[in-house]
Image (cartoon, rainbow, N blue to C red; front, top):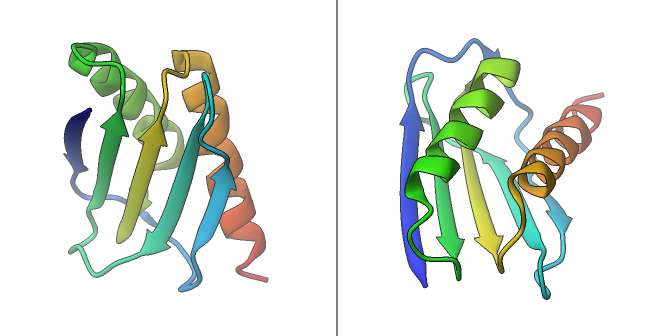
Length: 104
């Protein structure tokens, strides 16, 4: 298992206080837990992955995700069992969309 940590500064979109879990860890999939955290407008993402050595790919996917959503004061935990970058992006977008629905 490899642990990767990413932090993005100066986010603009703050999230509600509830947490949201999307996906299930199983063969070739991942789960995403997203929650509010006091991070001085930052967004922190921790990835636990069974696929070692893919840090640059994860970094590119996380940078693209943050560019789309521009999250602030948000902590994201990802548990991965070898999902493709497309699945990672899909699950992250699903998590944020479900999280935003909790705002209403």
